[in-house]
Amino acid sequence: MLDTNFAIQRKPSIVILDFGSQYSELIARRIRETEVYSIVQAYTITADELRELAPKGIILSGGPSSVYEKTAPMPDPAIWDLGIPILGVCYGMQVMVKQLGGNVEAAIGKAEYGKAHLEVDDPTALLTNVDSGSTMWMSHGDSVKQLPEGFVRLAHTSNTPDAAIALHSHRFYGVQFHPEVVHSTFGMVMIRNFVYTICSCQPDWTTNTFIDEAIKDVNSKVGNKRVLLALSGGVDSSTLAFLLKKAIGNQLTCMFIDQGFMRKGEPEFLMDFFDKKFHINVEYINARDRFVNKLKGVTDPEIKRKIIGTEFIRVFEEESVRLGPFDYLAQGTLYPDVIESAGTNIDPKTGERVAVKIKSHHNVGGLPKDLQFKLVEPLRTLFKDEVRKVGRSLGLPEEIVGRHPFPGPGLAIRILGEVTNEKLNCLRDADLIVRQEIARADLYHEVWQAFAVLLPVRSVGVMGDQRTYAWPIVLRCVSSEDGMTADWSRLPYSLLEKISNRIVNEVAGVNRVVLDITSKPPGTIEWE
Ligand code: XMP
Image 1 (tube, rainbow, N blue to C red):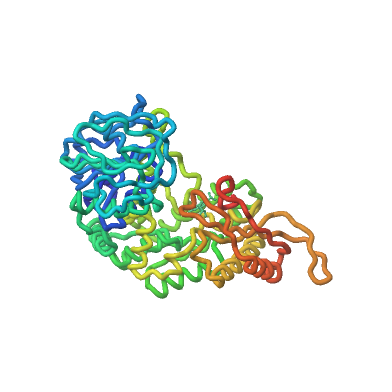
Image 2 (cartoon, helix red, strand yellow):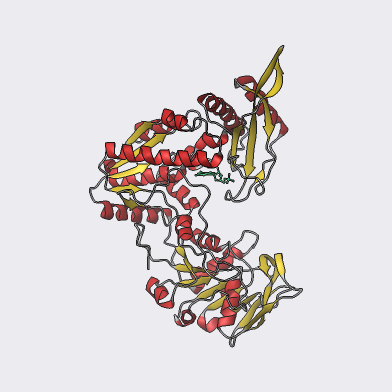
């Protein structure tokens, strides 16, 4: 049942059964914040499979369905006989009520969305140290009408009589709200009560234990064989490089393919940092001409992305033969990719598991599966914030660990229309100014991304006594939690003025700076 791919074969302390909630992953992350290892599984996991995993606790996630619909997703009813504590969250609580003989109905006129005040009726077990009157985040259109036999009420809100419930004898608990979201003030207290007091978990999921276990696993799997890693300089591949260097030393070779679409100074910085400073074998592949030549005359964004992706694979294949042979390919696959490809999404209409739609953004580092390598993916149990912690702990500087996301196709998708060397140079200079000024204003870590985009149109300007006819640069700066939604950053006028002045004065070929004030949705963060 455990991941058969190469990853840490650690048994989870808590298993979350996913009923399609947007918060299932968040529950797992919150539990891991308490240093308890948790994983997400599809709700279809059987009781026997769960017995094999032997978790100390189970959580049933929320979900978009209603338990009284015929197609509502339901867990294996045998989970109630496992003797393991179970916490149902929102839809998960309704599943508990329904399967154990209670009743759930639409909460007509009593639906609750947003903040609600929790009145505690029983301040023990799950609700120990949870203040009565505290805020909890609600999002439900259904309510419990009748509790199953033996259940008691732990708390209520003005609209929801059974906001938290328990069957103490079996250590079954249900909450109608979402303890995992930040707006639920005592949510973490409740999560700690569940994992430590109710499930008796140990705080053994720490960065150091992860690193130790990962190194042991890599060593036992790889032995004295050679491993190849495509290094991009992003947080994941950089952390992986450090981890593998620690585990297998010079058996690791990194390949850094310079497509010519990186930011100013970045290829030099990366080579200097990894190769010279940390003595990690990095093969620098200068493929700049290849890529820009392939993009001659190409203006369609999707075609551009495809060409870059295909060319990347071609270069990678050629170079791996030249530098090889290698037995293993290391990839920076993370836990959200693993959950997604396990396809735990649920269609709210049919209740069926649906194939997760292919991400529209593929990292160009994503390589096809038919390459003749065995995979090493030591980060596949980690969330992004955990990768950052591991990276820091391994000695990666903030410059890499804390950097903004940067798309695989790089500046090529920030130049609209045809990509040329002239435009690349121009954008690189403008982009550097944006980065410098955002950092000088001490806003780098306040914003999600800040960058420049070059538009292939020309407008009229005047410089000195000269009429100019040149490109505009768009300043794109957004705040976001995860890149899925975003808002444009309200930067101080003085900073905008500084950026605009510098770009127009210092970057040849640009005579105008405009500001993108579009949120996502409807806009995307990148322009292509
Ligand atoms: P959009 O433009 O879709 O971007 O709002 C969301 C986030 O994804 C990043 N992005 C990419 N990242 N490969 C990546 O690794 C890509 O091809 C790619 N395209 C967009 C984007 O920078 C933002 O953070």
